[in-house]
Length: 254
Ligand code: MG
Image (tube, rainbow, N blue to C red; front, side, top):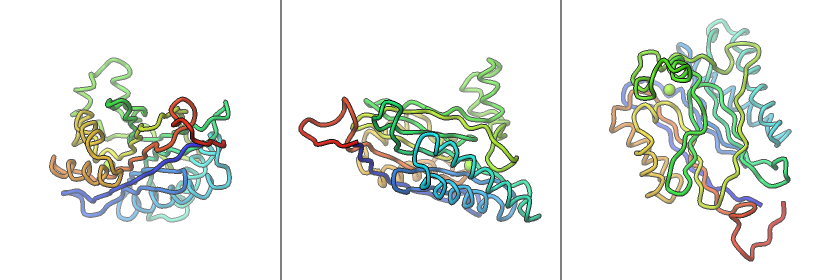
């Protein structure tokens, strides 16, 4: 058995007039969506995606169920954008993590990503980026045309090569993570990562124990560094783990 505890924070930032980010904390399901599209489009896309994700995952709470749920979220946003002319062209990023039974029967975290929101794993005092951005700048890094440092300030870093809801189907990146007690998973929109570097993120995650406080602290840091975009952070802590990390003497039932 694995027990998780989570906290989140979101803020419009210091430049934008509306917050088109959205976070989700549901039983064993966590997500960040960063909507895009003029007027209400971005907000609608993020809300439709998160609602569809939650409903679909509740019906099929497995690794494959998470993949299907992201597909259903894509279809739901795409359908609305086709039905309402004022929402045409809307889309959203979606980074989602779920606690599911792994292929070996032990609990694992299933992670799915489309777009440039990110998931980081904080373990043993170090932070590691798990997801790969679907942005023009990151594709250039993968092809050796840009360094990570160049990509971080590249004018094309915000141009997405993949987003949810902009076509009838979508390709989804998936991971299966085996977490230990004490590990922390961070989901965030680019409003955090454009303002705060991984060392800054690691510093907060190592110093602030409560997940809600940690999320609020990270959002405040992003605002101090400029707050040029909406900022959303979800922190998920592993309190009790499955397997090697489980405390001795604990009764575990999978
Ligand atoms: Mg953003």
